[in-house]
Length: 206
Image 1 (cartoon, rainbow, N blue to C red):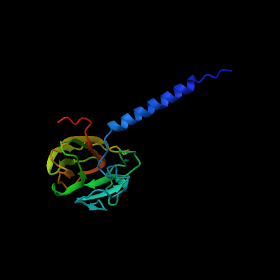
Image 2 (cartoon, one colour; image 1 turned 45 degrees about the horizontal axis):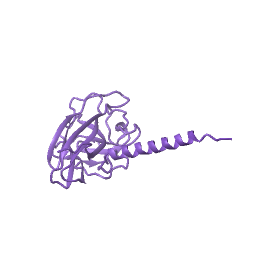
Image 3 (cartoon, rainbow, N blue to C red; image 1 turned 45 degrees about the vertical axis):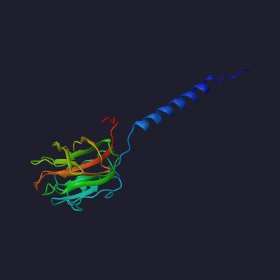
Image 4 (cartoon, rainbow, N blue to C red; image 1 turned 180 degrees about the vertical axis):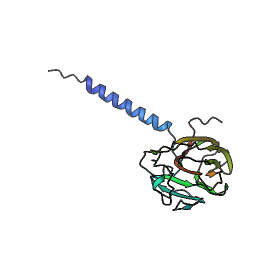
């Protein structure tokens, strides 16, 4: 009896094509140089001028799964999940009184003459804020831009928004990534950060 081997051959070709497509996708994707951008490893991989732990006072932060359950959380902080999965960690922040105090910072190695993209997700946590966080991104002391976090306060979570900025390394071999809060009000001015990334741009045309 003659055995038809065509389906097996087609399956082999399909597997090879799938493997090629997967490798191509990986080649096109850029590695995130930020060590713990999703905060799943807790309070590690970055530095901050803010105080870690109780967030009842300005200039404090906590890494946890829900702003309403952070130590010292206020009653109007939303019952929110993180951006990554809805059940993981995020950086929960009570904005400070000084616009020069860095909220989040990390230094990474970069390739000269290369384009990069710095990106993060942010959300405001108060139910009804009269003073919204105003975040600013700097790389090696250069201001890339600022972003006013939108007010959104349902009990089931804040509204995550993405903010991204392009940066050219020039002659630099390292990049000091930093996020600041320009709002210095003690009241309200509370927010959360998640999924911070810094990677080479897809196109590196100068």
